[in-house]
View 1: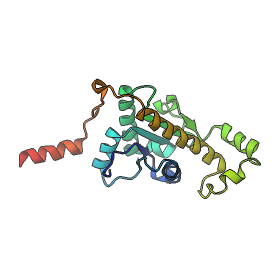
View 2: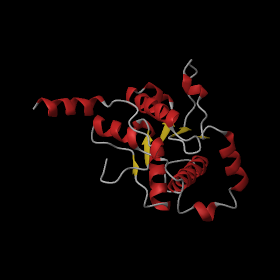
View 3: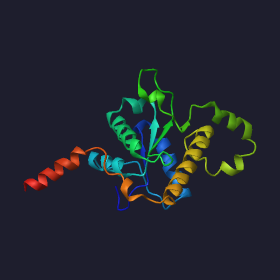
View 4: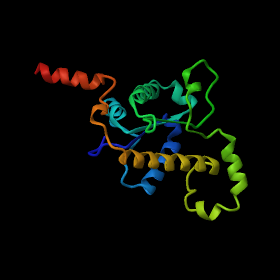
Length: 195
């Protein structure tokens, strides 16, 4: 993590990099003052970010569900969500691919946006003649237009949540602390104490 605290962390599997890049680029373009993290130097930095970031955008796909690192990030987000103000969620789940039919709790997560929703294709078909000029400069990505529409909504919503959070008075008694122990940080502290 850099000098400034991150506002948003994007949790994704490496096979879904293009979606994370699109979200990160969109937020950087629309709100350059926000800090978005999606890559970390090591596990310690990754877990530290997940424990302190304002918002965790989880890009859920079959690959995500198979990855121990991403599932760990998702568990941290769920745990932190339990302590959060419901109007300012920590976890922001986005379904980017159809998930395998298995008995997992990932199927009961209320997704804010699902790229698999036919709404985006219908939107594309309905407004394709009205929107090309507005989106022509933006559609340099490797995503389909309907995916871009969905992720543009994600970006606008994330920026709105950060703005809402910055205008919400902070109750000092409700300041969240780390909800899970980062074993890498704990190990480093033990080594320091042993010296």
